[in-house]
Image (cartoon, rainbow, N blue to C red; front, side, top):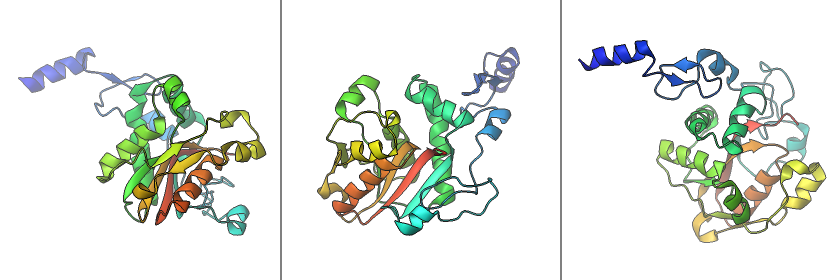
Length: 240
């Protein structure tokens, strides 16, 4: 009887869900995108630096360490990301962060989990989201990095230490600044709780990596507080 009712509901459209990207009707209760949008969200598998994710070639190119990372290795052990911050992935992230499309959160969490599964060599001791300053948090109402971190914590069955790292200085939005300005803007903007991070392997999580200024400052702060290792995971890597 239940199977018959479900079939009738699907046929009538009452049980249909919608693709979180294009809005097309689907019958996938997991919140997965339609087939066309799923193809547009394919992971980046080549043509990038494995240390910082810098995009340098076609998707089928062999991952190769970039000159900057050869000269000055980043302050983390491993870098993980899903794909380039463009197209459908960029739209998904912006709609969630600024358009409050919370229905996208489940899909973003799935992409983050898949990125971790592709790149990770070890399960960390804890997840640490990149924090927002309390003024920015009050304005936005939520921290998208914390939401991603909680999803990963549940998936990996490890704690999410959302107070291990705090933003102690309110800074101008990084998107308004050039490369040099971002480095200066974010310097000494974070503090770590040494009692929480000392001796632990941490997974630092954010939604987008642009110039890397924020992630580098966060990782350095965790390292100075005694973290045993820091890995980085972001959903999207900017092209430049």
